[in-house]
Structures are given as C-alpha cells and as structure tokens.
Length: 444
Ligand code: PEP
Ligand code: CO
Image (tube, rainbow, N blue to C red; front, side, top):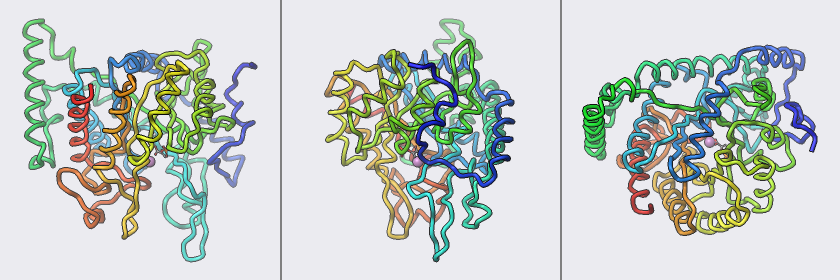
C-alpha cells in the first residue's frame, strides 16, 4: 500500500462537506491554522493510549462526556468550571463504585462541528443552509448567519485554546484535590434524593485518602493531580488536516487527544476513514443499529491494520430497543476476528424523541436501560464494557426528562439551551454515575 498522506482524504467522497463561497479566504485561513502551534502534545496522546490499553484489559474505565455541540458563547469561566466539576464528581463516584481508575475524556475544547441529516432548513418557504456548528456557521435563521465562514475555524482554534488553557490551569492548580471541599460538594442538588449518598461517598474517600497519607507519608499534593483528555468528532476535515502534524515519523491530530468518527461519516470508502487511517491517535467509531458487520470489520482493519491494543474505541449507540438484537452479534463478530477493541456505550443518540411541543429530548430511564442491557450483553459473552459516552453539562438545564427530580415534558421549556441534542443536566449526570456504579456491582 502507498504511504498515507495528510491530504489523501481529499480524493475520496466527503460526507457533510461544507461549501465555502470564498475559496481564497478558506485557503488563507487554513495556512494560518497550519502555522499555529498545536493544541495538545503527542506525548499526552501516547499517554492516553497507555491508559486505553488498561481499559481494553478491563483494568480501567472510560468516562467520556460533554456537550453535543459546544458553542463559542459558552467559553466562559463558569461553564468550563462546571463541566470539569461534573466530570470529576462523576469520576469519583465511578472510582469508588467500580474500584478501577477512571479515564476522563471531555467532549470539550473543539466539539464545534456537527453532522446534520438535512443540510438545508426551510421555514415559511425560505431555505437556508442548516446550522452546522459554531466552527462553520451560526444558528440564527438569516442568510448572513447561515453562510459558512472560514474565519470561524480560526475563532474555533482560539476558543479551543482558551478552554484548554483554563482546564489545564484548574487541574494544575489543584482543582481536583479532595481537600478542596468547594469543588466536590454539591451546589444546586443539596436537596436532591441522592445528595446524602454522595456526601457519604465523598466523606469515605476523604477518610481513606487521609489514612493512606498518614501510613505512607504521601503528601496530599502528590494526589491532587489528575489526567484529563479532550475529544471531538473529526468531522470538518480541512480544520483537522491543518492541525495534523508529524512527530518522530508519526502523524498526530494535535487539535485533540481522541478524535472520533460519527455514525454519518463512518464510510469505508469515504474521506473521514481515509483521514483517520493515518493517525497515531486513538480513534473512536460510533456504531448505530443499522451497522453491517462485514463493513465494520473492514473499517476496523483499515483503522487498526496491526491490531494494536488501546487504539480503537467502538462506541455503540444502538437505542434501547435494539441492544439485545444487535449487540450480541457485534460482540461475537469482533471476538471471531480477534480484533483488539475497547467497547464503550453512548446511550444518548439511539434514544432521542421529540415531544408534542417540538422539543428534542431523551428519557433518563431509556438511557439507563440501554446501559443496563449493554453491560449485561457484554458480560453474557465474556466481553466487557470499558466505557460510557454521554452528552451532559454541569449546568442546571432542562433538556432530558426523568431522573430523581422527575423532570417532565412541560419542564423542558424552563431552561432548554442545547443548540443540537439534549444533555443530561448536573443532577441527572450525578445520578447516572451512581446508577452505573450500582449496575457494575451487579454485573461484574
Ligand atoms: C454526536 O455524538 O453528537 C453524534 C452526532 O453522534 P452520532 O454520530 O453517533 O449520531
Ligand atoms: Co449529539
């Protein structure tokens, strides 16, 4: 096979491609992006791959989560802090419940491009390009806002850099240190049903840490640092290419640690797979209930030709109605091929429904049901679920229904903020982590 090159993908059919009206601005912008420093370092990506080897062996568990579509306007101190906080709190619950290290991966600092099933939107006889994510155009239904603007890629780069910079500052500054109760105590869920359980758990972990510190003489400061990785869908390939760089003979996408290919662009003969095939990064693949098993096998061979461990994450998003029909066959096919993969579950995207008032939503119980069935299928076949993938936020939004507080369809209008898909709110996310810890106890 001829050597891979970073521009190869351009020869293949590219799903979800963007037509920019001005090619010269596009080329100038891409050249600028290509000169700018990377957002992450290849050593961090190699380190993530080492952690993923543990997940593949069942010795660690992946928590991946964040917005469906990050917005530039949400690049603020509060929103970033709350996202890190909810992911850390969930990971604490999971560490305690699963007795395994948790690999924390945000859908953050670059989750700006969205695939759409309809590339045009029509309102009152006016047709305009659909909103495709802040890195491409804007949500307002006007021609100016919806026309793709290449300069938004440069803005996206700077917003991602600002987000990452602040995340790194929080983490380096000891944000994850359990001795900082303000970061671990619950804010607006103080009266929630699970607040007591959570407080008990944090107390128990603090006591355990204090005990270890006393007997081993380990200083608290050596325990406060954590690893945190970023991920986004590698959808908008001109941007991804501009941030793909060669390091010691290997090509890395240095805009994120973990790029994934979405369900709509995971085409064996398409541009996205051609692009991802050359990267040293670990890669995620979303798998829907319409998957063809031979076709998935061919994609796996393409993305991981040497069958390396810790390289490929298969993220099933089948829908609660389809798990028992689809997943056992998928697991069996992967076992027969002896393919090295890490299984994760996105219980959000196969369980979306629209309410009578037109809100896109997801029910907490459907999400949990998909997870429950997925854990059980893996266990029944001698496989294991090594991770979960959520759309969530650290803020108090009302986008998904159900959960301990019993949000219903009427409540959605109170704080529905997502630009694309509905996310679990702060309280629902915490509750979900507690339910996973319970599930794991019953299936492990
Ligand atoms: C997403 O993760 O936001 C997404 C679009 O997922 P999928 O490709 O699985 O539909
Ligand atoms: Co989504």
